Length: 113
Length: 114
Image (spheres, each protein chain N blue to C red):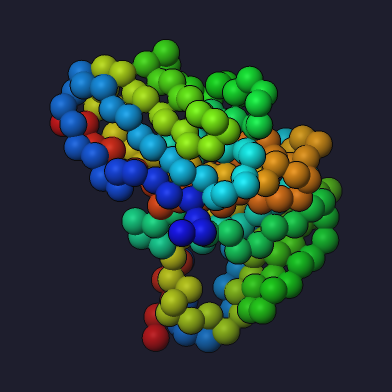
């Protein structure tokens, strides 16, 4: 079993839909959780950064962490064609959270106008 | 530029040649990371530098891979005697090295071994 599991998709939704992206993990030491967005031929761009369990909202994006279930989610409201990209979950443990990240394989999302 | 800068953006070389990949982190960032992204494998950690501490090399796949960081800033990843399985995108990230400071990535070097 890989440390972080993420459905690779592809996921195709109509413009305006609510998108739900998820990852599960096995290492209970993880306590810093991130979502990155990656456009083709570009580096990952940080979207959301959360510590421990709970919710965090930023504009159309909401990140949820459930440490008891070892499950994290990213919700995108009112999805736009510009949201079409690969979404990577990432996580790490350690005192500072600056230790190397463990990534899911990414979910490819297409938002159709 | 305010972001992480990597060069070259693309590199094509013959099997058996050595390659050097460069990373300029965000100014003031003390932590620097190298990752590799290949089809089917996702993003994998290679090596991590934090300030003046000895680097964490636990992710390097073989002794053909090495990296250094000069003056606490620029880093070079070297792959000796390249093999076709080394073909991938090599990504560099940096962070402030303080608690709750996330990693920011460059656009990577796309390496193709013929």
